[in-house]
Image (cartoon, rainbow, N blue to C red; front, side, top):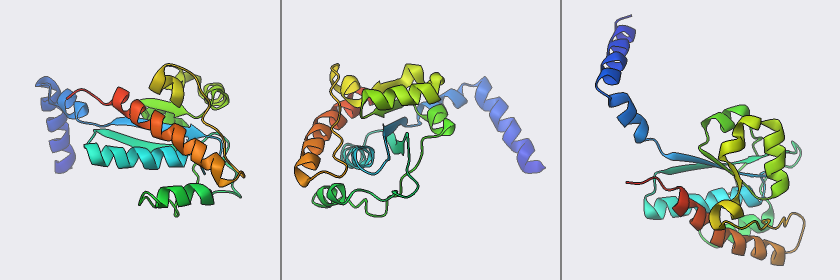
Length: 179
């Protein structure tokens, strides 16, 4: 009882003196990377983004999600795991996660790997409209589908990583909140 009363007093005091808005300003920008199954492109984008965020000390938090998760195929693709491991990034324990209404609500920015993904997210969650973009459009202003390498040889994964290496840093730079 005493704790809840103290919390209520703090919230009222903070709102009167503008402390609540200052606390919210400290929250990181929240970005969700989305693809079909959350086993290749989106998990790779999340992993690469986390590396850049750590290296540059950015106030950004990232997640990756699926628009059509297959509950029988939840592990990351072996070629993506290998290419990330070559960069000292381990995603081998990642498990696919389906995009939810909560993800939409809490994300500041939702970046899909293709226009089809964007359309699917919009059909499921029309409220995402103003924060939903394809990764390439957001990063460069021009639409280019991030290649789907699922089930293809390593060369296809190298093509995906070439795209992600260009788009992910540009998207993070664009979305980085001012200091």
